[in-house]
Length: 264
Length: 274
Image (cartoon, rainbow over all chains, first blue to last red; front, top):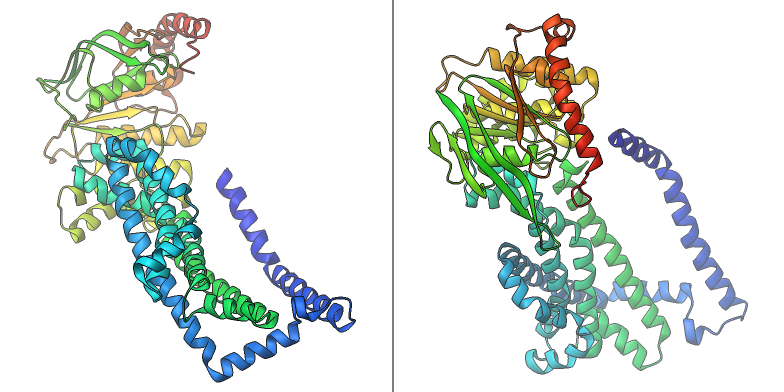
């Protein structure tokens, strides 16, 4: 009875939940406290690693004068566009390849070659092609998101359970109904499961793109701070980025849970 | 009327090693409309292959499979197929799974759901219509699968060891339900007579349920080695039928045949087909 076992485990996890949250908070507070006290005691030089109080003060200042919201909006806009375009292309192509093995076989080495290219070397090219604005960053995010989505969709279509397909065919499904009732839902489970990864990649693409050449965005803020050896600015930028990723991931996690409710 | 006919059917497969594996060799038999026929044989003798051929999911390498007199070309449109594995769509509720065959045929959604609702109750899942398959026990999933196939009202029911994964008592209950559904097949339906081709490795189950038992030899190259009518009346009480003299006699006679095949299959077990 594997079902029963899993349910018991999930229940135990639920019961331990408040305890886990408490520990999580404890670890964070402890780490920050150690950092702050080491700097205060003079054990490490704040020039290299700044200090939590200074970082918090900087973030407070940023949110007060509104600069950070403008940069954050730019980064989120780029990430979201990258995620949407990359997903659309990846899902469409993944589905198409999954349905025609010949096409997949022909293009297989090329897909692998393209996926092996380190995206960061593409950034200067994209700057050249798409300019200093948001689209060079969107393009970078797309190259990251595309492959995650492509491989997930391809797997999902190819791995659709043979028995499910045969069963639905025996129940009278036409090829089109087969796609709708079996292949798409089967691929969707893979697609949703990789949504978290894709979102992370989209943000990496946007921030790296900004970092390498832009006039706005969190990556730009961090690059500017680094240019003036302003470690407080660098850490503040990273913290903002981290907080945003945690919040957005939580939202996507909820969405995934809701969409994949049947998995229990 | 003959519901299903195997006419000198053989089927080979290409093995990954580049050789051919002969699963079925020159199989001939007929199933009369309205009959309940069970096929028994040792593990790996190609029973599932035989059902896939009857369903039209596989084409014979040589010979012909006929459904109601005409040779199959593609899927057997007279048949439904209850697979050994779970085949409910995990992302649809029990109700939507049961309604699926109707939805695919273009029955309006409300009507499909209403009819599915009746079938869900009929197989004893009344309180579970909104559950997903993952929330049900193995026996409940089998009931849902039976409803999913019986609702579309085809005349030939192919069943591949449908109850082999269930515990003894659930299994007995499911067998009784199957017989009840088959014996009381809706006479007002488009095709009143239901024909069942039931594959199992369990000789007792075969005799208890069927009008006729066909024994297949061990693979590779499985053949029909015995064919015997079951001299038990209907309706049958599955709780008691196994101790009646005619059941015991037939079981002994067929077991003599099957035992040899089981021995052979264990001696010459093909490593490539566990």
